[in-house]
Length: 279
Image (cartoon, rainbow, N blue to C red; front, top):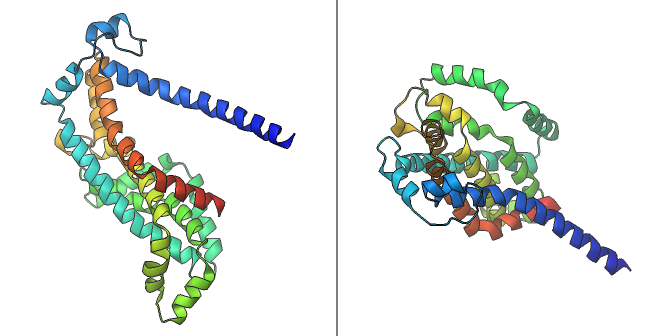
């Protein structure tokens, strides 16, 4: 009886997840299909998921246009996202270590105050941030896309929860052997937290890679060679909004790097999320 109920619950859960997956995948498949359709096929059969004739015309057009330096935009996005991710891992990991391993007065209260800032809408900070960027003379550069986001709380929270699972006995033994706090971090905590770091790195990279509003504001009035990929794609969609094949080709190109990174690291990512969730 119990096994029958468990089997029924698993079946229902599977069907629900399958339905949600289809809802997410259909637009993606449609966009991928449209990017390989001939213009006449897009006009005559826009809802078909399988192109009647495969063509690379839209991708060739995308790379050939001088006003759409897609590879330059991809390179800009990758460099910015990579630098931001590396710096964020340093900042978030040190902060998480302080809030999980180190003991000081008001530690938990301060952490919950910081965590509470996630309830503040991001849009509220736009005007003060823009003013700061202008005062620092960072407007129109890559620095606003790298530095302000280092204060993000999500990675801090995730790493803190993971660090709390590190055995206290192991840390105390290391300190008895003469390790300093930095020694404990680099020799004990860091090697045990690789999967958690990969999860934080992926989310940080994806968030920076896909960011649109903030780069759009920071690159307002600048040369196209400085833009990130989302900003460039918005210009393509606005300029060639009638050319659905070109727009979809650009959109598919934008998600390929993230999909590749996730495909390579998915085992570690799932492990990190699962272990953090258990804690």
